[in-house]
Each structure stands twice: as C-alpha cells, then as structure tokens.
Image (cartoon, rainbow, N blue to C red; front, side):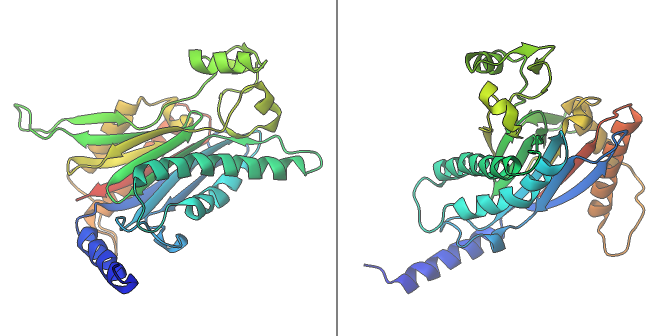
Length: 315
C-alpha cells in the first residue's frame, strides 16, 4: 500500500507539471440594457474556481467557469443562477483519484442544473405572489484544456479556431465551431416533448407565450414539458484556438455566429492600439472587441438586453 503522503506528493507534482502547459484563459464582459426597462441578464466569470472546490480530482490542475443567464419575466431567476449555480457545481464536482472524470463531470453538470432549478422553484413558490421568472443558462466549464458546455434555452457559445495551415495569400482562415444547441418550441423533438406533456406550441411559443422550451424557473410551464436538463457538449482546446464567444440571444438576433467571430477578429487585427496602464496590448484589444461587439448589436437594432463574454485562449 502506498502511503497517503506519497500519493499527495505525486498528485502535487502532476499538477505543477501540468499547470505550465495549460491554456491561459481571460474573460471579458460587456452588457447593454438595450431598449428594455430592466436588465434581466446576469453573468459570471471565474477564470480559476479552484478556491471554491474542496478538492480537485488527482489529474486536474485548474477549473474555470464562465456563464451567461438571460432572464425573462423578471431578473430574479437569472440572478439566482448567477449567485448559486457555480456553488452547486463546486459542491458536486468530482474529487480525489477518481476513474472516468469525464463521465463524472457530465453527471455533475446535469445534477447541478436540476438542483439549481429545484432550489429556485422552491423559493419562487414560497413568495406571495409566487415568482414567475425564468432564465436560460449557458455555462462554459474549462477543466484544464477540455471545454464542457452546458446550456438550455437560446443563449449560445461559439469557438474561434484558426486553420493550422495558411491559405495561398498567407492568411490563416478562421473556423467557427458551435459549442451549444438552442432549445425552442419549434424544434421537432422539443415540440413533441411539450405536446406529450399536454402543452401546446402556438406562434412558436409554449402555450403561445414562452419562447424557449428549456429553462431554469418558469414553474407554471414545467407541467407543459419545459425542462431544466441542459444539452452537453465537450471540446478539446488546441493551440489553434483564439477565443470563445458566450452570449445571450440579444447578440445572435443581429449577428450570425460566423459574423460575430469575424467582427472580433477584425478588431484584434487592427494595426494601432491605444495603450492603457497595467494592460498588455492583447488585453486592450480583447476588451475593445468585447465592448464593440455588444455596442454593435445595439446599433444594428437589437432592442433586447445584450450580454457578451469573450474568453481569450492562449497557449
């Protein structure tokens, strides 16, 4: 039997060896109220949430978390998610020398969404009158160099990956990879589930009212087939990856995913950059790209709230 001290030393050595090869991650956020009376979006940036975890699995060195929540019917559900979901995740995250960490992380994400939904619904139903708020949720969890995306509703996450080889003109082309799947009642599988539960879809909405078919909260629609089970995607980061855009539907109403990626790339490639004390040139460019992307969505006529998180990826 190996001593506990020896196991801990080996685990510490593995972490210190792995940490140097981890991608550098830095998140930037821009939020615009648009023409809405209230800002109902919420967001969280946790580039390193290790301090929230009781213990990391032996082979894991770092866990990062970025999330956007787009509320409807009020801001209470989105704010509740922003306050509680990552803490629920931290409590359920696998620890110790466990086998099949990938499977455990996916189970952890499913359990976390269910727990957060149950907790909010319990709080909402105890109010007088009962809260009717709901929220989409798109969460990007980066475990070392593996990205897990859990989402429900119509907020989205996309990855910008550069082609390994340059084209004939010497430029490397960008590829836009979808990291999430939208859930709306017009999709066949979503509509069938809602109808089997006794609900109806009218004018592309659940009961003619709710635009999304999965959400946290929305207690009055849970009996109609609206669920809180997220879609899960997994992606391995590479040295060719530049950034992730994580945003509510306010952005994607006026930008295609590819347009948003190219808009950011154009700003990152601009020749002159204004120096700002304490920030590197890359940091200034990414901050500007994030802010300008959100502002451009409003300029293009999006009246909805707009929240954009831009996650820099560096190797």
